[in-house]
Image (cartoon, rainbow, N blue to C red; front, side, top):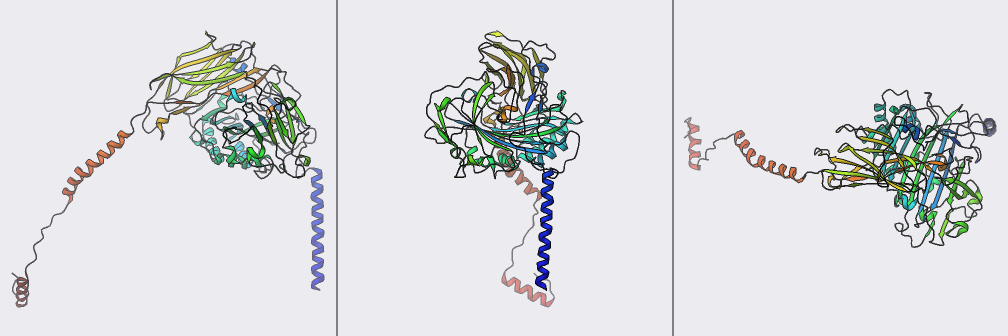
Length: 631
């Protein structure tokens, strides 16, 4: 009987499990419980944005006309609306110097409404930590980057996504925020804990409110710059503690997909390393009836030919990252590798192994490029070895890199420790077209600018800016902010010079290594640069993701933002050995002089009589027995 009962129970349990599984399958087919992924062609991104005009503008609203206005980014979908979607890509560009540039991009699209104040409790692909930050602090856009090293524009060309050395963060808040400064302070402290960075040191002395730079990249008609905050930490050191929480934000982490290649030992042993997080709202259709949020995680790295110990000009995924690829992220709807083969026509300069017949033309940074595409979602990419290792072998050292149309440099001039000059050089390498640039400078308060000494010269002549916005600093309260719109003549070098005076800090305000100097953040130069080729407005999913971050509908120009080098300025530094000598001398005087006097004043003195002899003690014992007083 017991055996029959157990058999009946097993039969009933099996029948119930079959019914539950069948019901789940039907719910999945209906698309109600778990949204299915989009295919590789299911998302098509087009972008509309107002761009700057290169013509002359007036004094009052010049920056508003020149800075690109709020772009309306649209992601139309051919199928039913999806709740979330994840895409990943790796773009590899061999450089003429023998180095190699690798750019990772991981994009998560999520259909939800944070702006409306709705509470979101379910997170699938979008990281919960960032979703709670957006909801709690009413963030409209968030852009944060951590960079180690300086991007050499004249050797490597323009980066896909620029960033300054150190840490940079700029945030657009919603217009419902009443206390922007308080919210900004709380947000930086929270982000400091998420990314294990020193963002909690951001305060009013190193953050500003730009008036024309850093327009919103997402949807919305935000024009009030009271809801914008920008800050930099040029001395921030990027290490594994920053990379680990960044990788944890990915849906697959570092266990599958392209994130497997993100090995910290190889990434930080490079000439340039930059990781960033960009969050912005986007339109889902052309009429913007529904919105979604885009989380774009980027990582750019340049591997040096000599630093890596390479004996010859040959690169592979294993030599760059010490790992190979075995599969794509199972949660990704698109996982591809793009290799820029534009500089190697018909394999004259380098060859790829394994070769691929898939080629994708695209217009990147105003130049027409050609990419070899490897789709990791196809099992044929990995072959019979179930492992993918891309090999790039150089065949010729001939070739030249086209100079970037816009380049900027900055340095400190002068002698002594009282006054100095800041020189900013902006190069317009276009042979016959001029264009305006918007320059933003954030100078600490301990460098007191003489704004009346500001001069702008081009080709030996004075070049008057058409727009200038300057906010003076307050000692230990706020920094200098200088924004100006300058027209760069064709094939010229424009120099911006301003004098400053070094302040003498309090001895508690100096860093532990004051003789090393103090860092001044990079200048930000933004412009619409004339394009060499016509911009292709028919963007498809086959184009790399970086091509859609700073899009432009205008065919004659494209948006570029570049950063100069950070400055290292020496300040008047006192002799910190003197306080040590004074402390030692004071302690000696206190110990010898005051200590001895205090000991004499507080000591108790007592008179001790000498011990009597043996005969006297015996006599006293006898006298005590007789009742006579002792001697």
